[in-house]
Image (tube, rainbow, N blue to C red):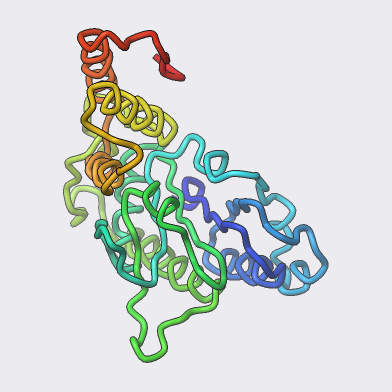
Amino acid sequence: MFDQVRIVLINTTHPGNIGAVARAMKNMGLSRLYLVDPQEFPDPVAERRASGATDILDHAVVVSTLDEALAGCHFVVGTSARGRKIPWPVVNPRDLAQEVFVQTQARDNAEVAILFGREARGLTNEELQRCNWHVHIPSDPEFSSLNLAMAVQVVAYELRMKYLESLEIEAPHSNMKPMVSPLDGGWDVEPASVDEVELFLEHLERTLIDIDFHDPEHPRQLMARLRRLYQRCCLDKMELNILRGILRSTQKVAGTWGAQPPRSQ
């Protein structure tokens, strides 16, 4: 389970927080840390705050963009401390742990990313729209702000508790909820990756512009709502191919196919 989960920190400001996150991860058995454009890393402060978890820092994957951090992922969750203009599926850390357990046990190659944003302002709306689900830690509304490492610790703790609970469940009597999803082990087609879904959404936007359904000068949250729809579905590769085939045919009828070919067929 833990080998299939990556913790992704975006544009972290203080290196001490990176070290504290590494310690929180190691406490709970997680080891895969991804850093998107950290302001200071590597740094001695991070090593000191890691308090023995420097192996996680040594193996941290440092990338420039969120796309690189999500490469190969099938399920993405973003931490969010507040409601957004367009609501997204939201779970608490305990329900998230249940879902991560089901998905990682159903498929050996299922890759899950859990995103944590900047210390001062969290994840942007654009980053949250890359996620299938959002996770919210139900802290006291009167004092709801959590330190970055604390937030990671809460989520990692729930993952750990789910793992320990699973050791007591015999396979024939498992009480895991059924997943009607490509990430289910009984599904007939492999789930689409985050990269493939992103290419589809780019193709969809171009097609909607071609047929004058979408005006990028006056977007009216259209693409954000369509993104939420398709992220919620957890598309498989066959479904994605069908949808892109429909888009190709639509562009051919509109006479725009080939004018600006998609990045991937």
